[in-house]
Image (cartoon, rainbow, N blue to C red; front, top):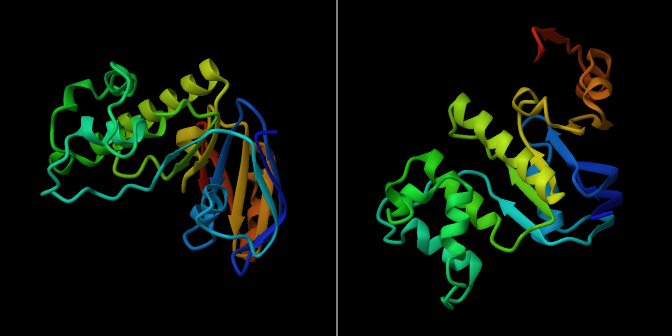
Length: 230
């Protein structure tokens, strides 16, 4: 397994977490604000400590952080930020590698533009290129669909799914909504105020399961292939 949690806890957010992620898996992490979805990624990256239990990661990791706009006055170009990801410390990156990464995410046209002048969606493309810099085996994506319109959301999900199939890449994808990834996800980890549930979509996204996790009545409706939680 590339990633394993054993009886892991970060008090007071979640506890008793057991999770294995194998090569090529796409796991969506869902739940409301404040339940520790981003914290989960932090325990893998080493920026947040577990209260108890263990986490083991045997993979090269790429990370797409939550969207935060770059300052408008930042003078660096998109190409510069990707270069830093490829070769930290202002070393010269391998010839052609930066252009290859920008092309792979569809950002060739913005390579020479200052990142502070880019739209939210364009800045997200730069972060995707940075995440691929070291050919990751496990990609951690923290709300990568924020600031994207529905068309760009669909394109981003399809792109990640293509990468995972072509490279046997595993994806741990934090999101507030299941529908954009419904057609690609293998399992769902749902974090909620009264516990968590891990399993296939059809086992987790059920009225009785979410009602127990929230401690109040929740209804899950399937409307023309989309799951609506009310």
